[in-house]
Length: 105
Image (tube, rainbow, N blue to C red; front, side):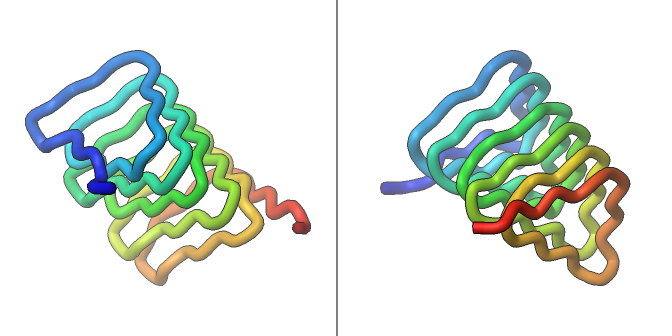
């Protein structure tokens, strides 16, 4: 199954739900609930609370992240909010401000 894409020129405000992978290159405000993986690309600007299986951040994120598996903040990303996941990876050069909760399996 191919991933859905929210392109650079798109702005979405509200609730977003889905059962496949999602790549965000545009701007999203609201709430995002996905069954699979979510990737915020370098051009992505997100102001939302997100819940999904895996989250990868390369762009700017404001809000709380909840992942059932893993959250990854890549070099150059900016994340402001709380992170909840059993595994969290923060690359050198990523900016992060918030709290981390890593529940045991």
